[in-house]
Picture 1 (tube, rainbow over the protein chains, first blue to last red):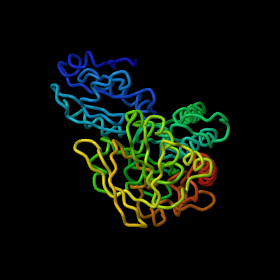
Picture 2 (spheres, one colour; picture 1 turned 45 degrees about the vertical axis):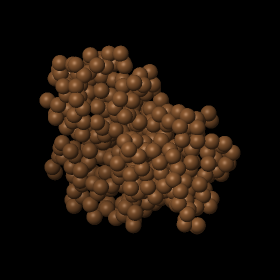
Picture 3 (cartoon, chains in turn blue, cyan; picture 1 turned 180 degrees about the horizontal axis):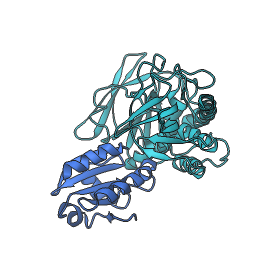
Picture 4 (cartoon, each protein chain N blue to C red; picture 1 turned 90 degrees about the vertical axis):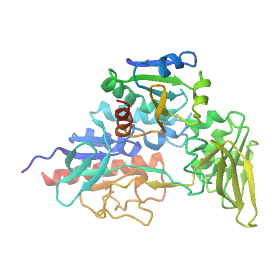
Length: 108
Length: 308
C-alpha cells in the first residue's frame, strides 16, 4: 500500500469514509484492471499534494462487492469524491490529472 | 538566439511515444514526453497482446507498455504529466501550450493516439460507466454469469468479445456485415466459441434501462426487422478517432482527422512528425506504431542537427 493511501473494505467504509472528519477520495480498483494500475502513480501524487486536507483511500472491488454495488459501480477505475458523507463527484475511466485536481478543489 | 526549452517534445505516451522517446534519448537529444493520462495509451486496456513479436507466450498490455516505459527511462527519457492544449507552429521554434505552461522545441512528434469512437445511439452517453464500456479488461469481470452485447467486427471487437466470454454467460456480437473483418485466427476462435453469438447484418439502434443497461435494440439491415435483447452491458468497438483536438489547421489531416505524413513521418509542417494511431495509416498496431516512431525520431534528429 502506498504511503498516505488507506486501504478500505466493506466493513469499515462507513466509519472511514462516510463519517470521516475530512473529505475523502476513494479509488475503486481491481488487480485485473490495467488502467487502474496505470493511474496509481497519479493518485499517489495527489495524495502527496493534498493529503493533509483530503483523505485518500482505495477499495478493491474484487474483495469488497457491497460498497461498489451501493454506488452502482460497473466500470473501473472509478474515483468517488465524498464530502460530509455525500458524493460530490464520481469519475469513471482514466481522467487527466487536472480534472482530478478540479474535483479535489471542489471538496475544499 | 533565444533559448529553446527542448530539442524535441513528444506528445503522447503510448507505444509510439515511448519508442520515439527511447530513440530520442539514445540520440542524446534534449527531450520530454508529455502524457495526459498515464503512459501506455490504448494498450493499457488490452488484456493480452499476442501479435507483438518477441513474446511467444503473449504478454499483457500493461506489462508490455510498462517494459517500454522502463526501457526508455533507462536511457534518460523524461516523462511529464500534462495536457497539450494547442500548438503554435508558425516559426522555426515550435511552441507547445500545455494546461499549465508553454514550452518550446525545435521538433515535435505527435504520438497522441486515438480513442474509441462513439456510435451515437440513444442511451450510449447516459449509460457510460453504467453498462456501456470500451474496456473489457476493466469492466468484464463485473458481468460474471450475465449476458452482454458487443458492437463491431474488427480485431479489437472480436478479441475483446472473446475475453468477455470468460466471465459472461453469453456475448452477443453485433456486426453490420455478413463476415468479420478481424484477422483469420480471431475469426476462427469467434466462430468456435459457444458463448459468443454473432448477430450478422445487424446494427445497434438504442440502449435502454433504468439506472443501468437492461436491454438493447438491434436492427437487421437486410430484413429491416428489429428486436430487443436483455443484456447487462454493452461494449463498443466500432473503430477509433484520432486524439488531435489540439492540432490547428497547419498540420494537414485526412477526412477522418488522422495526420498525413510522408515516408519520413514528417507532417505538412517541417519539424513536426507523427507516429502511431494518430497517423493516416492502413494498419494500426503496436508493431506499426513503434516502426513509425523509430522513423519519426530518426527524421527529427536530422532536422534538429541541420538547425545547429
